[in-house]
Length: 263
Image (cartoon, rainbow, N blue to C red; front, side, top):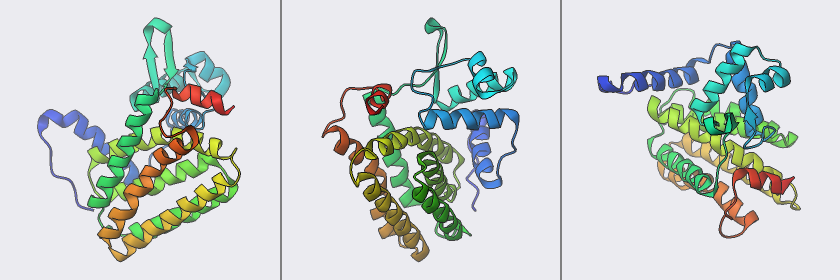
């Protein structure tokens, strides 16, 4: 993989963080109590077990998730940094981040942007890329068969980030990673909504599998034109699916209200 060019010194702190994100993806991360706590709580936020607007505090995490106070505190700080939680001093603490309709639109726009750029910049000569994607796709297929929405979105994120990794740009990788985490909450919500409609969920999962196979095939053949055709369309599906279920225009509801409407 080519190393990205050195960036100006004044961006040293951010540069270090971006390089760390890319190195983490390349080498695997060391587990720790804090990492495990972050992974656990992040998963509960993404699968909507911790609903938007839920207060996150140390006593809750210590009691409900059996965490030590220090890992709980550090986990909250990490989730705030990732944008999955927000601090509201006037409300007395930290809460699972809400997304209003304008922010949902922004997340979907960012998702379409990163996948369009990915189609242009993906490195076909990245050694092991096709093999890795095929291996991830097998796990994705298994999660689809089990109808595990958290598993489906987790492996889907891994599938896309493996492609982003080929670009070799730590800053862009970090942006893509953050975007995919927000998109995962929306995708879990979509799957739950689609599950209530006859055959809608099965049809969508089949489309996802087929499009992933098409992406892998385009990369295997080194076909940039085909990749430019399929990746942006694949990314636009989330917005199209929301519009299909909720009407042509997204209603002026927050993510929390949309979650409540599915219960």
